[in-house]
Length: 255
Image (cartoon, rainbow, N blue to C red):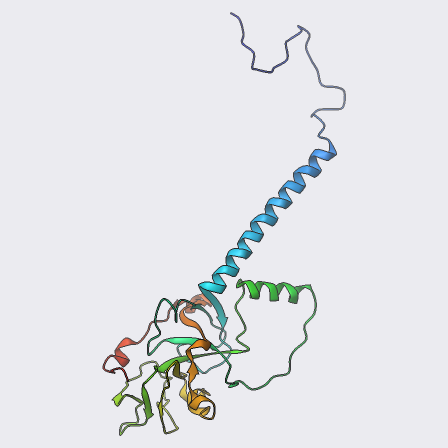
């Protein structure tokens, strides 16, 4: 029976072939090893670059992570929580009363702090990862509050039962920090077009719209709103969706 040879195989001369002395395996040239390493590094760099690019696109157009630094939204949000903020609201999706929003501090609500200087490779890496959205922003120039009044609404406090009213309708607020009153300050404000009135859930510990009436009567321009916080992602034992309490504002008509 004739044995077929694989295409390209060498013809058998009839003499057995043995590897050269001291060479159990074929020797791979150093140039081949170096080429393989370069190919691997190139592929890793490409994958990392694509991942960072996608993350930056997501942060820019879809969502961003933020770190909660204060107690103003307790017990809904605790210090150290990480939340994801949807940048599709406002935008394709409308803002609503009861939404929790992150907004930039154009009204200078936050106290001025001395800038801290950081150095080292670790800090540079952290800044890059925060910039592309792989680490949460520290919220040093942003605030997070709950929308109580929309453009045209008249928001006031307090009625005969101590409740906040919107367009004359009392709002029962289930998210308030236990033991807090809806407001220790009396106020009445009509929210101008293109703005919202915001308050923290921990009313006794929230420097919100009530305390910044000297700038735009305490309202926040919708253009300053980064997006709506919709989920807690860290720590793991607190992960969960941040639902809008629609029942609280269900009876409120538009202003």
